[in-house]
Amino acid sequence: MNYIATPLSIFFIFVAPLWLFLYYRSKKETGKGLSAVDQENLQSLVNRTEEMQQRIASLEEILDKEAPQWRNK
Image (cartoon, rainbow, N blue to C red):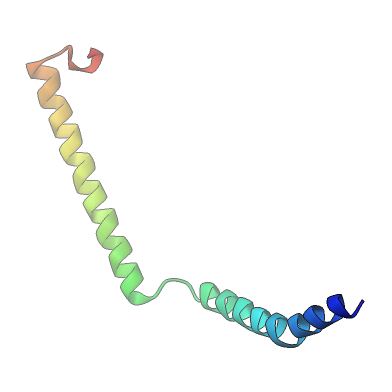
């Protein structure tokens, strides 16, 4: 029985408190939301995505005029 009690006691004395501390610290940080840098990066990605969507729509219009059957290939 002692071979089970020793690892369990070590786990509950050292590992479990550290685990709980790190878990709740990460929960607190995720609750804060995005930082200013993250928000800027996200907005930049949104802008680039919108530009890409416009470019793709333009290319599809050109292809529809130049090669109407391109979607079937």
